[in-house]
Length: 102
Length: 488
Image (cartoon, rainbow over all chains, first blue to last red; front, side, top):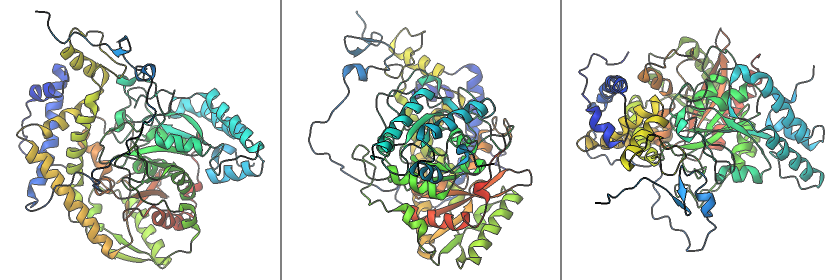
């Protein structure tokens, strides 16, 4: 039913996985690369459309500059904000060291 | 035998409650017990807190006894898809990455349901992060279609649809990014409404594709969909995409005398993948509307067949950005293998996300990446404009557009799970509606020979929910499809 016979655009899966900050197994890389090739070939349909002069649409009903009144609103307590933290200390999210000592 | 409480609609339960023929505790207990009985077969819920639901029900009974009842939803249980935040309850999006997450606040729709007195009932299964059309992408369990347990309930709001069809809740909340309310509603024989983008607040809805997501009602009748939408539609300052549009009286619209509607039928878009039995049901629905004085007009939506590629570029691009927040810092799951910040990101995400979510993050990252942005993402946004224009042109001529909701009835478990493209095609009729930001209603319009529900989709102009519900109601009240119940 779909255009599987079309030449498959190749995806540099390592490059994209690095951008996405996502470790993939060797098996996932092979499978996703093939499936994404199929999906991208299907996307080629879009190249047949003349889009010259057509404005891109980011949003169904664009609303701009939505401003709130500058009034104090109730917010989370530190305990509520940290409710789902994997690690915390002194009312803060704890993460591995980012900067080297040296 | 009198009709059991668990197979009644919101409206019927509301009348029982108002006439003091049943208490909310009795009503809620009926759904709790029905769930206990059928969950081993259906698997609609990821989490049920029976004591909490019964406590909410007793509070509703106390309000009623004190003469302070809050309206038609007061004391009626409503199931909640596991993507909408309810303070103090788990919220997993059916993903391992949120396995231990507890919502620290209520979504706006939940605040409004509480204000209406609804009993918030359980957490309903879904495709992980709402990515899927069969609920097979849940990291926790599969959900069965109550009409045939070997088949899928549709997705991503498959738990919501199955719970309503199985009598485990009279109604439920779903969310719809490309068909995730309407397609499972169709496959489970219930009513599902995706509102116009911006009519319902997304505050407290976990984001999948922010320019497409909407929360909506999944119910047994159009009347119940009107009641439920009424309770939570309307502007919310906490969602900057929510629109300052007046909320009409949806229920009153159902009672209004039928108008001489003009209905457009885009037959050339129905395509080769449309099942013959579904096609026959849709054709007889068209004949029905004709017999009621509606004018039927053939229309074309020239770019409609591009909805699928446009959707899978835009939705995955937005998802890859939205899901970047699950990085091991704030949202419960951090890999025990973590040694430094970078590998915390890579490993926490690899352990937490399932295959379809990973596939879409990779695809979305790719279409946004340098060198491909113009070819894929920007071009898709331009074609999105053309798709919207097709609808605008059609609505110059017609009041509503009628299509099948899905090309086939419910398919077998496992049938499409290894072929992402085949799975994506089950949303072919619903996806363009999200891209254009329009309202779409699915309602039961027949059954296949093997007794599987078939759904019909009505698409309207922006903010035409009341019209769609009225048009759906006209069909519904002349047929008995909505009152059939799955035997379990």
